[in-house]
Length: 447
Image 1: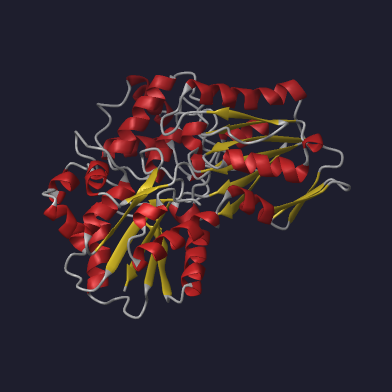
Image 2: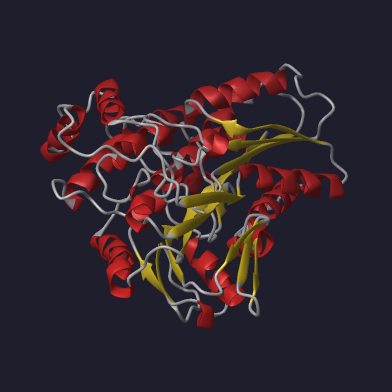
C-alpha cells in the first residue's frame, strides 16, 4: 500500500478510483522493478547488458557510484543482480538508507538543500579512483535519479556549502524551472554538468537514470553529472539576471560565475566519449500504467502529456477551462504528468506545487455541474513537505470549506495549501517517501 491514508480519502467511487490509479502509477516506476527490467548480468561470462547494450567485465572491475531519491533501492537491486562478489566497491548518496547492501555504501544526505554528509559521500566516490587505480577497461556504474543535484554536492574550491545552500534556496523560491536551477548549480560544482564522468575518464561510465525532468533532458536530471553540458557560465549568469538574483546571491557565487564568463574558470565538458547514459524510468511509464489501470476499471483514459510545465495556478485554470468546455468529452480519466512551477510570495505558508494545484482547482472547477475529482501528487511522496505527496479535491470540497467558514482564496493567495487541507480534511495524499521519483502525476475524473 503506497497511500497510507487511503481509507480516509475513499469517501466516493471517484475517490476510490483515484487512489487506485495513483498507486498503479507509482508502483510501475519503483526502482527495483526498473532495474530488473533494464539490466541483465551473466555471472559466468561476466557480461553486463543494459537495455540491450553489452559490457564485458570478465577482465575488468565494477565500481558503483550515484545519488538521488531512488538511488538506495537502485543500489540494493543492482547488487542483488550483479552479486556482491562482482563489485569491488561502491558509494551512493540517498535520502533514505533503509536498504540492504554489502559492497555498496549508502550515505544519507540532505535534500532539498545539500549538506556536509552529501559532500563527504561524493568525496568518497572520487577517492575510489586513486585508491584502486581506476582506469581504462574498468566499469563505473552510476545510479542517478531525481534529487541527485542536492544529494550529490561537490562545490568548487571557491564556493562553500553555505553558498550552495543559499543559492539553492533563492532559486527554488524565485520561480525558476528545474533546467534554469540546474544551469546555475552545474557551474558551481566539481561533479555536475558532466564533470563526474570526465573525472573517471578513461574508465567507462554507464549511468542508469530514473528521470524526474520534463522531456527527459539528460543534462538536467540530477544536473547531468555524466552528460555533456550544453549550458555555459553566461547562461548561468543570465538565469540570475532574469530572476533579479545578482544582488541577492552569495558573493562567492557571483564572483565565481563572473570569472567563468571571463574564461578564468574551467567550463563544463561539452563532449564525453567515455560515458553511456540510459533512461530506465520516467513519467510516461507512470502515466501508461495509470491508463492501463483505468481500462481495467472499465474507464476510458486519455493521456494529455507527460511534459506539463508552466505556472501552477495558470495551468490549473487552463485545464479546468478545457474540462468545462468539453475538450475531453467521452473520456472518464484525463491524465497528465510533468512539473509546474509556483512563484512563492515573500512570506509563503506551507505546501508544495501539488497541494497548491489541487487548492486552485477547487475554485477553477466550481462551474462544472457533474461529479468530478482532481488529484495531483508527487511520485516521490514529498510535495515540498515530507510524507505528503499532494492532494485531491472534488465537487464537494469547496462547499465543505465554505460551510466551515474557510476563506479558500486567502489560503491560496498566501500559498498555504497544506494548512487549508489540514483544516478541510480528507484531502491530503499521504505516502511517506516512496523510494522513486518521476516528477508529478495529475488526474481528472468525471462521473
